[in-house]
Length: 607
Ligand code: PTT
Ligand code: SF4
Image 1 (cartoon, rainbow, N blue to C red):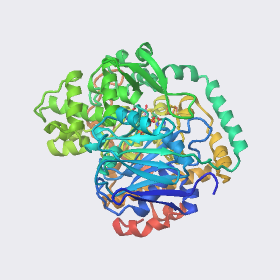
Image 2: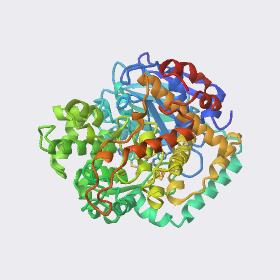
Image 3: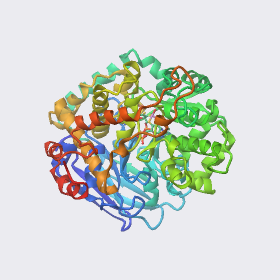
Image 4: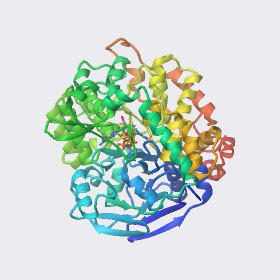
């Protein structure tokens, strides 16, 4: 097999054993890699109903056939597991040299099972695996941990680690790399912490074998040139994703006061132009010629790497309009290893709960000092409120009330686009396969530019088209999608690159089938792990139906529940899923997923 190594490295943390195993070649062709391979492994090897924070859960690192090659922004990888936040499938995509080293060590996936008796670092060098005691690193933040491991193993390695949030099993803890890369929003860091796995260090020295190296190099070079020649490139290089603050304000979708409004009076204090005044560096992932990590000096004089999501969620959503202060909160999240989106969302929920008297503590909007304390309480679970909020909005509201304003779908907090006046984006959040995340279908820019209030079949089809490309393909051939999304790199590079890497010709129909297969498989995983399914799982937060916007040009707007139900029906119809959101038998057969049928038949029955 060229383009894939065909090997999975299994690491048993309980027994301190490891084994490299070949996996079936058809898995590679049918699921490509990354998210697809991770979901396939979970279906096959995760015991149904396993405790996400117990020894049976599998923490999976996965790369794809385009990862680590000389083509734009290929230094990315997927980290996946059963999520402790949602109880369903969870993953994230992190930029790290670890992805490149995995390819050079000839592993398509590394799977960690069991629980170590003591904190441990796993060092992988090609075919050799070592278990290094990590008592000295436990408790250290992610920056200190990575610096220490680099001192020990040298600079030419890839490192993924957790901070105190992962150690303490905050349910939205992430896996961090390179000081500002974070992956695995639905608690992949908590799973790593539950296994007492402080860090993974990878060094690969073998050659990555591809089918046609010359053509691959030429195609990759063309794509690199297209990126820098794009009209959008110069402004992108100035502001990166931070340009989105002004766009979101203009479009009335900037999350404000726990997603109560889509405009924020103080947006100029946190926007891309403010960031440009404070910028001290720019950094990014391996193989990227359009790095998006804009680093500023924060209120405490430290570097902090900003992205739109981080700034909106820890800025406007909690009523804070000072970028230097937002930078401190963002840096705390990176050092502790906790997801900024769920953190800002959960703190916003707490502020509203405090205002409404559901929790006794006073937490005012924009109270920077209190928020800093609160982050410490959440990460170290040192107060009752911290313990409550460490579980995310869904679990927190089930204990004290306030579920009407808990902004999540399937238990994962919504990322930074308000949907009072964006039903298509609401559908994208609600049907995302990991819970509410914009990564699978960022339909909102298209929606705002077309008929934003429509609940049409065309809109459902657009969500699915984006889910196929973004959530299906970029997550499984595993490269960064931003060259396409942000500077308009032609998508037709990718089937060609795949062909030169693997020797397999994929038409767009073939690729869409791969994506649909992955989506149906992940839906089946959710059904198996939750022991059932209902269409309510594919609904967005109640607040967008019940509480209209009161500010800005779209004041008075809210979603219509009946029309949303129709939009969801269109979505199911196009996917070949029934009215409950369960893939139909014929759909499973068409996608070559017959092996799912007996289990689904038993749990929910198939149409
Ligand atoms: C991603 C999510 C995002 S998406 C952002 S900002 W974004 C937040 N970043 C966080 C952070 O930083 N620190 C932190 N402690 N928590 C954070 N949580 C949030 O996590 C990220 C980029 C970005 S920046 C985006 S859009 C694109 N996402 C991609 C994706 O999902 N797939 C893909 N094939 N390519 C992508 N390219 C872009 O990558 P999650 P990263 Mg991230 C500081 O992981 O779990 O998917 O959540 O990976 O290396 O940091 O790159 O405006
Ligand atoms: Fe990484 Fe950003 Fe470059 Fe994508 S655009 S590869 S996330 S630095």
